[in-house]
Amino acid sequence: MSSELTRRGFLGGAAAVTLAACASETEGPRPTGQAAGGPQVTYAPPTSKLSGDLTILMWSHFVPSHDAWFKGFVQDWGRRAGVNVRVDQISVNDLPARIAAEMQAGQGHDLLQNITTLSQYEPGVHDLTDVVKEADNRWGKQLDLCRKSSFNPNTEKFYAFSPGWSPDPGDYRKSLWSEAGFPNGPATWDDLLRGGAEIKRRKNVQMGLGMAQEVDSNMAARACLWSFGAAEQNEQEEVTLRSDAAVAAVEYMVRLFKETMTNEIFSWNAASNNQGLVAGKLSYILNSISAWRTAQSANPAVADDIFFVPALRGPAKALAAQHVMYNWIIPRHARNVDAAKEFLLHYTANFAAVTYHSRLYDLPAWPSLVPQLNGWLDNDPFGAKPANKLSLLKTAVDWSVNIGYPGPANPAVGEVLGTFVLPNMMARAARGEATPARAVQDADREVRRIFDNWRRRGLVAG
Image (cartoon, rainbow, N blue to C red):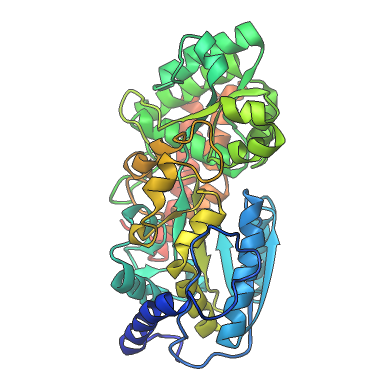
């Protein structure tokens, strides 16, 4: 098979998926680590003979049961496909630097995965348009949220493949918020400030929205900006950060910090708010469901007290960034492009198993692949109390948007994200190093510099 997969070969693979779905009930052993009760893994033979080695670099999942399952899943595929597969899983805190080093050196793994956009690496990766088109042929249209996180409309290339994502609801302690007068948690950013301040005053329990150089702080900054009517760019990919709405959002975050949080939020990593919530030290975080899943075993009393709310409404909108957006890229230095592409399709075809073994953390970019999802969210297979605690996630795609909204996650947006321009802007104002207006002005200048650089290279519109 050539690295540019043909339509004929793909359609043959699609037919094989259907056959394998039937045959898998009786053929082959269950992959190591697949728990009883999970969706059965299917296997479609590759469209041409594969061989050699395939090396994968990816994160250590926030839900450890996923990693135990994935290792068996990938080895089972390699055995059937005739490929020697090695998977290296590392901390999400270390992953961006490792990817950057490999891309700069032009050597390393064949297949790289990150949980945020990797658009800034477009010049150094293989175009995955053929893989996305075949996925659309097999399973319907990809979610727009995921497409905008992996496609550059200026070059008409899919620099990444995004088979799944995770929402970013608010995680709140019901007992604390009930005492503060919000038994169903905050619904607006104003509720968050009033309730969070009351809880800190009465209980000395702070909130957990970071302003640090880590992924959750990036998402919180964007959710606040969007909800106040601001954004780093518009649909035409023009920089729009410097605005009254952005200044109002930063002013709000300064108040939120002063009235509900402490200085530790400026030095957090991606696990800090999870750890604080599980330990019972935080009243609210903006995060996925992983902290609660950890608490189910580590601190069940706290887990039962954690509930979720959708995106908070601000003066303009109620939007949250996706918490995780899987970007799988095949760098130009990859030695086994064919195997990497075939594995991505096999992985995506089995996304019901991915969702199940991530304990409903990973949601599908092609919804038809997980028809069980709404039933699982209404009746959690993993012991939620109450069983329908996650039912609000059925509408997550309605209040979740991609990084770079209302435009695409272009390479400039990827660099702005990776250099933490927006949480740094919030932190400077909160620490009193700049007024909110000056912090926005300085951040806007940095965003414009980044956009101008990528625009000169023809990778950003305008």
